[in-house]
Structure formats: structure tokens, C-alpha cells
Image 1 (cartoon, rainbow, N blue to C red):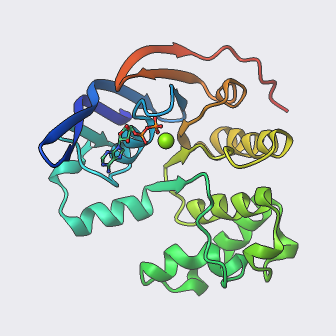
Image 2 (image 1 turned 90 degrees about the vertical axis):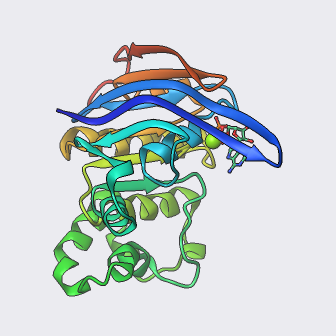
Length: 234
Ligand SMILES: Nc1ncnc2c1ncn2[C@@H]1O[C@H](COP(=O)(O)OP(=O)(O)O)[C@@H](O)[C@H]1O
Ligand SMILES: [Mg+2]
């Protein structure tokens, strides 16, 4: 079964009397374990598409199915629990809470969902080890580099063990060396943890970490292609 299925998706934004069509007739399927990169010029609708896939926004027309469930059929409560537990998001600017330490930032989605943190101690240790920040548990974001802050955001996105990760320009704010290290981490999360990943990126180099490339132009899919495996697995 397809983990993500997009059917005849359209999105327009209304600004007063003016309606702008941002996405047009998007059809796309993503299978379990794929790592899809969405590329395209600024303003072509990449983030809008990602938010529709993740249920953060609703399409004007068309459907998004996650594991066979049409998001438009879910009530608010079901949608938000799906977003919490089956989907992880990582954004360009980390979105960490400045006065919470690393562990508390990672635990935040659990707290907001009313989970007992002590039930997740092993999971928290596991994601801390994955991001390589076990020795920085008690530091706050301002005591971390940009790359480390993004790693915390990645750990936070994994704490519910979601099947899918959505990444919006996840290395857009990092220098290229740090960015490539973060991409290696996503490749590992894809391969070893079997997470399905969809990322928006500006960087061809970062798209090479994926398995499939979707090119978006003016809100339409221009091309879908397999990525040549230039990236060597470690
Ligand atoms: N909430 C919104 N209201 C009105 N216009 C929007 C909104 N979100 C995005 N847009 C417009 O949609 C277009 C595509 O935006 P976006 O998906 O962010 O592009 P990209 O991520 O490819 O740079 C842009 O022209 C943007 O101004
Ligand atoms: Mg964008």
C-alpha cells in the first residue's frame, strides 16, 4: 500500500477578491521507505504541498491519503492525533522552545498530548543517542550550535516513532558541511529506521540523499524521477 497518495490536488489562496491558484492537479504516490525530495523555484508551492501532505492545511480540491485514510474524512481530534503519532515535521528554523532544555524540548510533543513522560524514557534515550547529544541533555538551545539545534528538532520529530517525516528545507539555515552531516542522519533514519521521508530542498546535493525527485514548477509537477545513487552508504 502507498503510505502517501495524492489525488488531483488543488490549492488556492484568497486575498480579498483575488484568488491565486498555488497548486494544480498534483498526483503523487509515496511508498513505504521512500525518501522523496521536492525541488523547485521559490514560490512554486513546495511548502504548501508539504503542509497539505502533513494535514497542516486543507486542499481546495482533491485528496491526501495517509496509509489509505483520506485526511478530509478525519475530525479535528483524529487529525491531530494522526499528525502527532504518525507524522513528524522538521522545519528550517528548528522551532525549539528557548527556555526548555534538550530533553524537555524533545519531550514536548508527549507533554502536549498528555502522555506520561516516564513511559517514554527509553525512547528519549534512543533518539538522544541517534542524534549524538546524550551528553547535552540539560543544555538549552542557546547553548547549542545550529546543527545541534536541528538535531534536537529531529529527535523531537521521532519521539512518537512516526512512520513519516516531512522536512521543509531542513538544512537551509546550516553551513554546507553541517548540512551534509544532518542529511547523513536523515539517510540513516530512512534506511535503518525505515522511515518514509518527504523533504523540500533547494539543494541538489541534499536531494541525492533521497530515492526520488519531484520537480515542481508554478504549482504543477514538472517531473518525477529516480535519484541516481551518488551517495555511498557508509
Ligand atoms: N497562507 C497563504 N496565503 C496566501 N498566499 C500564500 C499562503 N501561503 C503561501 N502563499 C503563496 O503561495 C505561493 C507558494 O508558496 P510556498 O508554498 O511557500 O512556496 P515555496 O515553498 O515553493 O517557496 C507563494 O506565492 C506564497 O506567497
Ligand atoms: Mg517553502
